[in-house]
Image (cartoon, rainbow, N blue to C red; front, side):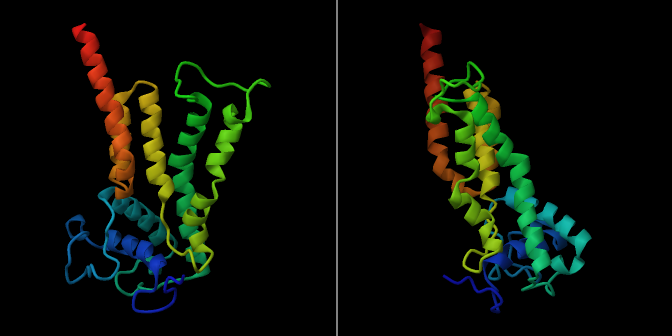
Length: 224
């Protein structure tokens, strides 16, 4: 399953993420999603929602400060180097440390079995399934997420930065907020997740059904 690494004219999936940084850094916002003389959408055009684009822009500023060649308009196409791959892997790690991992920690230690009434504490009577540390390790050491979000920068058959931890982390922040009764904040968090990756549409139905059910339940209770 090759990705076209080092093979012009597209250079593979790795190039997509690098190119998005190039586009967002060098072009005005109004051109990011439109085909122009400077932005050929047939060459890895931005196809993720705006929050992804702004994330790419932040990464691009850091990349520019390290090595301007990494995001130089047009001339950086196909750029690949060991140092740049380390940088790209680091961007995934930093995003996870800021968004995904804190959400997982809070979820595992504060929400279990659908309850938000008490904090989960260590106890010898906890079964493995209810042990927050075990749950935390299952989340963080899940092979699929590690291989997709990190392995692609090391192995040629998995070569594209996905940043799945960002969208999943935002969605999990939404779950946390709903579990704590902060429905507005939960809705905002999930909206951010959806505006980062359209893949979060898969999780839209549970959020919708929960909020609709709660609204109906509260409405009926109010009438009673």
